[in-house]
Length: 135
Image (cartoon, rainbow, N blue to C red; front, top):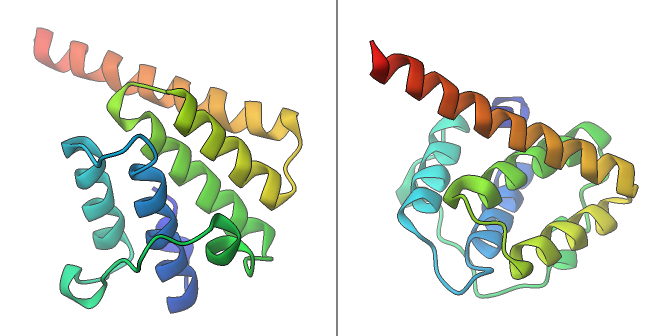
């Protein structure tokens, strides 16, 4: 949704690395999460063959160098969309989101604002499907 605004290759690769780590937070990457990662790559005009996720890394290694506030916002919004993609917000994912928010220096209010936005986006998508499929 917002990844088109990432310009540097470093930011794009860091985001994909983060997306892989987050998608695996619950032990596996499900089909919806795989679809999100593929759509992330397409949005950033990256070929699947041009990127291979590295071995497991710490969050601080991946996002520690991201200093631009807009890039942090983009990363966090997109990661929360990924976390909620499977309809389950389990404890591992919740901890991962809170860790990312903390490393980005987000307040609890900012974290909640992003989370509530993602929940509303998901509800609107469901509402849209219901409207379309009802016709």
